[in-house]
Length: 73
Image (cartoon, rainbow, N blue to C red; front, side, top):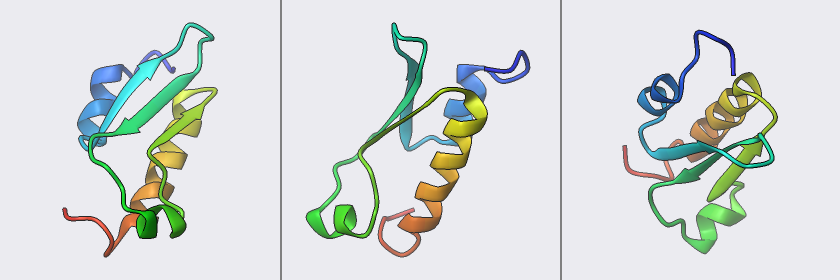
């Protein structure tokens, strides 16, 4: 994670996700809600992971785009 990006920054930017770093030093994010089979089929994910904060943010933004119209705001 960049020195200016903290877990609090990520959590504030993506409040519908819980974000953490694993013992393997990867960043993970899990949705704070269950997804239906239809939402999963549309490409939404319960949990995603990345090597760094920039990759995680890109994936989270992609998930937000995919979720448009499928999830309550």
